Amino acid sequence: MKPIVQISLDLIDLDEALDTAAMALRAGVDWLEAGTPFILAEGLHGVLALREAFPNIPIVADLKTMDGGYLEAEMMARAGATHVVVMARAHEETIKCVVKAGRDFGVKVMGDNLGCPDMVGAAARLEDLGCDYIVHHIGYDERRGIAAQGKRMPSPLDQLREVVQAVKIPVQAVGGLSLEQAIQCPAYGAPLVVLGAPLTIDADAFKTADGDLEKSLRLICEKIHAYE
Image (cartoon, rainbow, N blue to C red; front, top):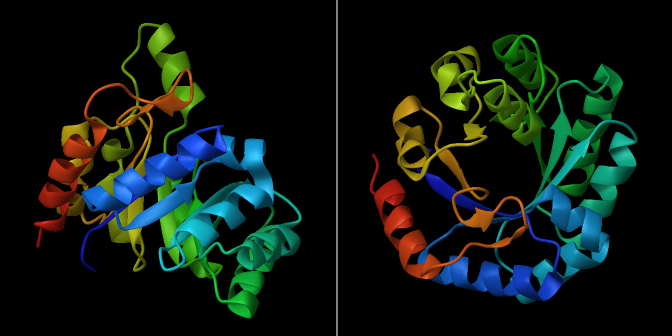
């Protein structure tokens, strides 16, 4: 699979999200992600707005579904999402429901192993249950909490190779990666590269970061897309 660059719109203002998405696509980003803060703030209307503005671009709805899996996936599919996210720590039946909805409505399912004691095993289980992609994820609160204790902040790169080796479906790594680390993900066997907080978004304020973001994104996309 050729590398794909996805930008996470972890924003709570619709206009800013649309402007950021347009800029990211100009810079070479392939997929848009309606991040969890965006979905909480704008809901279905936000996903509908992204679909209307960008009719031919894949849109990931980061629902982090834990229950009501079929309905949540159906709602986002009807709003225009092409991918939905279900959590590995959800009940097995919920994951199966999301997968069924994905098949029924033509959307891909991304299984997220955030918070799992056995991250590698969780990824394998998600694949067994029918997910199309794995999100190998170290959470925002987890990273900050451990760092506040003076300990080394965990990184998705710590077990990324093991996760990739455990499954046959594409993997993306999420959680506190530096720009350099994100660009390296395809070399680990993870071709889906996510850019978001803290790479391009102010994680604390949930607004776009300062500086020439479009120029930076263009350079990042060029480096990632050049990987073979």
